[in-house]
Length: 187
Image (cartoon, rainbow, N blue to C red; front, side, top):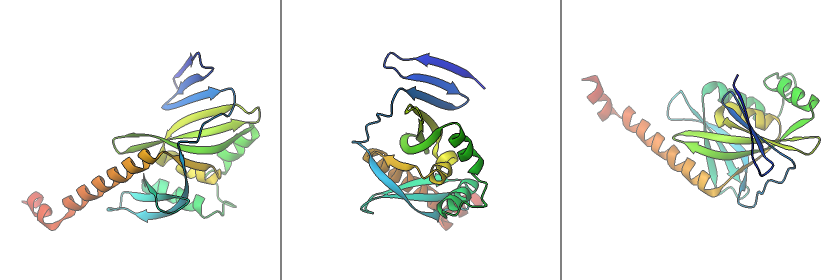
């Protein structure tokens, strides 16, 4: 586990732990004015058996944010969305541990797109009111945010770019699976 601590003059400290970037600030003063709150809406199968798409929608229901998931992550999302976490151990230990240490995941902010990978920042508040921001690959972390009953936020351009990438991926997969193209590859 690599650990790299950098202090920034703005009062923010950064630590790199493995692949996760952790930022610490003094108080929870995150400005949400340029973000749209989105809500878990549903889970649908993708073009193939390898990916599902988790949909979040804004309050009006007009904007939809697609999140691509592997089967195991889609299963965890389905369990987390069911709202019945009793008897489920998918995230119970993690949430109990965070709570025992005085931490609560309050927000999941969609932060970055790299190719087709989406990244989310968990905003974790401690009982001392300090804010800790940790960036994760969305598909590996989304079910934990749902189980923690965190609020979800994204900028309009993130939603638009995610929808565009989603359409490109679906079109490419459909072209590959089309009969005409399949014949080309079988010859």
